[in-house]
Length: 221
Image (cartoon, rainbow, N blue to C red; front, top):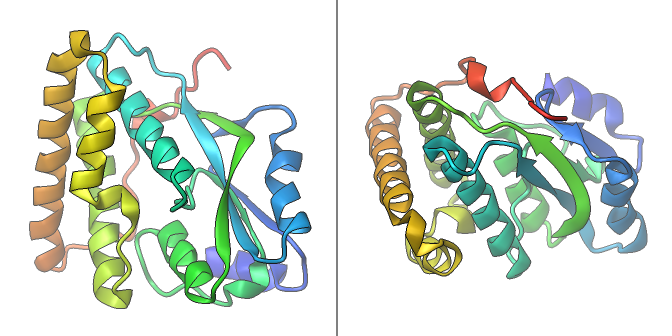
């Protein structure tokens, strides 16, 4: 489907991709376009996905932690092109091979050609992170398999899976009153990554993304 979209967008200046389970804040569509129109070197623009989950619950805490980490790491200069909501110059990507994470391949392609990805601070989309163990593991295992796949295919490793950097940022961000949630989050994320490693090396690639029901309930927006 994304290749069909790319094919039909080749003659346009900008292509905006928005996940069906995300809701952009008013003005965010205009805000995510501006950097592409102003700076020739910018090939893609990433948004600021913001979970609406309750931070006082375990999975709400994890959802906010994951996306806060993405955001903080992006502010340090190595911006991730988040699949929830992003914009790109469609002429930079002609076709996407059969991969799990389309957005990661597009990120790789843009940077390989010498273009930069910019973080749009004022392009916000609201989303709901997984709220059950099953949905969390389903989502994170799939993401990690996608990372392994792109790494094997291209050699590209996104900053968001560099464990040492992640742990440093995590320790600075988390309220120590929530240390039990942090320990649980680390355990679950490592578990998902290990499971993904074995599934990937057994060639069990989830090209069709399983439905995660708890992420579809965008409360309060």
